[in-house]
Image 1: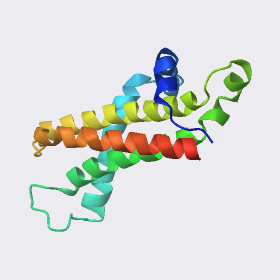
Image 2: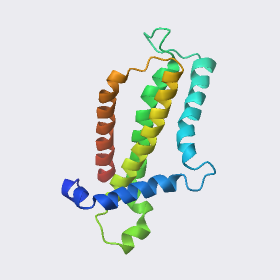
Image 3: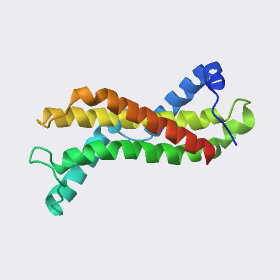
Image 4: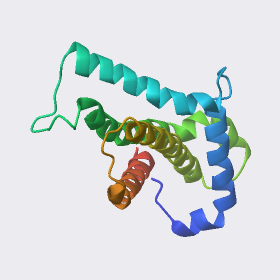
Length: 168
């Protein structure tokens, strides 16, 4: 079983950075919109959730005021979960997905798990920022003072996804 080692990460930080950049670039390489889709996708997903849950099913947040619509609730709760679940899925299959690289080059294989998890969080964090800015521009109350708590929460989710990715 692989275990986390800060010394390994520090020693191979340039390789880890290259693997993360490659993973983010390869994710949207075959699409027509490319990296633009990484920014548009969260808005499309949020629009679909807003229409389906707020207008079709008429779901409301319990004990919420009129200034806190369901869209805001979904946006702030859904993106950390999406980042975690995608990072976990990609982290658990990282070594198998890069089997050709593992067979040809000698390096710590846990770096593949770290790179997949970090790349997932990078993409979803960018999407989350786009959604928060859009909600703020639409006039919803986005509190910037809670940003440190949000960053800490995402960092903890990142560590948890890495731990489960290594374990599984």
